[in-house]
Image 1: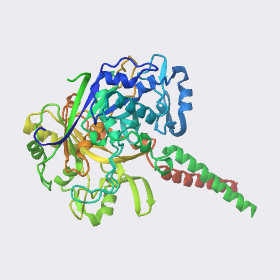
Image 2: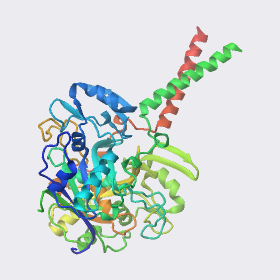
Image 3: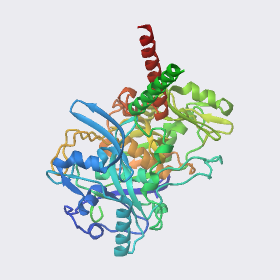
Image 4: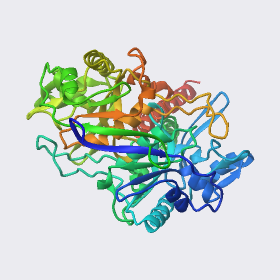
Length: 265
Length: 265
């Protein structure tokens, strides 16, 4: 390696894939487009998986599709021009519009997320490993906003054949002190890094990460679903307005029932 | 480039830096440790900037330091063994313990975040550009948890000499449709990517990103502060429990005052 370099990896955006339509053999198309080796991690934009799986509905049905994909409304806000709905979708992912998106969808249509992104990732990893003999990991990525910070980052919504966390709990820092709660979500960090070569407007839906083979593993490792924190353990499980309104109703009712009790005495 | 590669970048973890103490000339030490060229982006763990700036307090003063660094408590939860406090700190960053951290701090001490991470980043970018003649960007990173998802990712808490967003608003997707709200936070994506080579236990506090020169720019571009969403525009500006409790009190009081009015009639 060059002077001073302790460790290194690279990310390549893979061009030249054809337009993906329902039934496309993504594993074969990806293997055709690039050379893969043991330890490589493929980051695949979930949109092309949705297209291959036929997860497409008419744009006119967009609002109904969002409702159908929604398990739980986390927060919503009305603004000039529409409503922003942050929801938990059927995949357990919390984001805007349940992942239903018109960008890079066929004209007049919108794309839904894959039904089970971890299963899709596992099928792709299995297929690509079989075709190449290379032990690769696979991440399906989607673009998501986040609380407190402007803009979006790409995150892992599906994963297979790799560790999604670098679990350092129980290990020590450089000076020997315990890192009790440290567990970097490497799958999210890799998905975000891959966005830097894939972009939104570039027509590059697949990236290959080379040099992070230490995170690649068996096909039955936990997928991206294991990244999702159960709502009951989350300090931000619903929006501030929604929680306030629920509290207000409960407080109002409690006070009223106290009044009723007092009247009855 | 290799077969199929449309675009590529690499990230190198830079080893060999000495232990950083108060007053250290970080720009000179980094320039000594690696070769830099136009368009490179340096991702520097904020901890070594804190050390160079002497942002260290005695571990016994940790709780007081957290209180001192806190502008606003966003959410807190008592659990067996302590309290988790998610706060907005003086830098405007929302995270646990106001960024006060014992890991990789000197024995018996804890590190505070740099007072003004964007200013620190700008000083480093200015110094490194002067020493090398290379037009580089600088990110200061810190490790932060997030709502809804387990684990942590590294994010940009300071930035200089680069665009922190890839502002695609107004541009189009590969099929020509407008990307009206798309604005990837590339500074956060790059900070997270750099964590993959820096790690928490590796003693590698600096990474160099080569191949993303399109994001490098003037030293007076907006810094990481521009990533922070103002609380009043955030659907998750306080925790669900905190918002519920505030609503409950308001609802209870409102009901009581209605009762008082009725009695007075």
